[in-house]
Amino acid sequence: MRAHGTPLCQSPVQVSVWTAPSTAPDPDDQYRRVRVTHRFHPLSGRDFEFVVHRRNWGEDRVYCRDEDGELFSLPAAWTDVAPADPFVVIAAGRCPFTAEGLLAVADLIDRLRSHPGSGMAVKKIMP
View 1: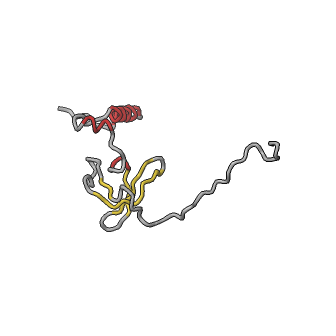
View 2: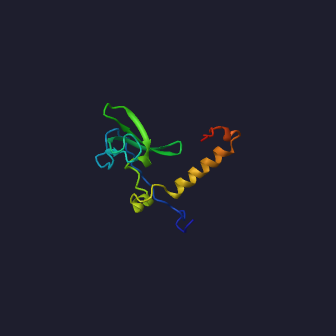
View 3: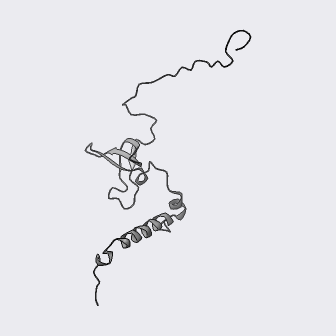
């Protein structure tokens, strides 16, 4: 306590202004349309109405509506919502695989080989 009887630590009352959530589209939203950028996806190059960008079950997803108004989702990395991968930008089409992608394939091959009977999964082709 101070000499005047007021506590040493007084904090001003903080007032927060809560706004009601809106279902109206945000005019400043930069992703009113979402373009599918994954080059091997059948919808590559097409754009769709953006609904929401959220993280579900540990994965970044973008929810969109197609021409018929049907809701669907894609991984955000397959769209222009996600920032471009710096490796892909710098490689400029000269390298079809990333080191991370190649390591993932090698890991998958190792796991498949470790399964019992994996040698029998593929038949030998005799000349």
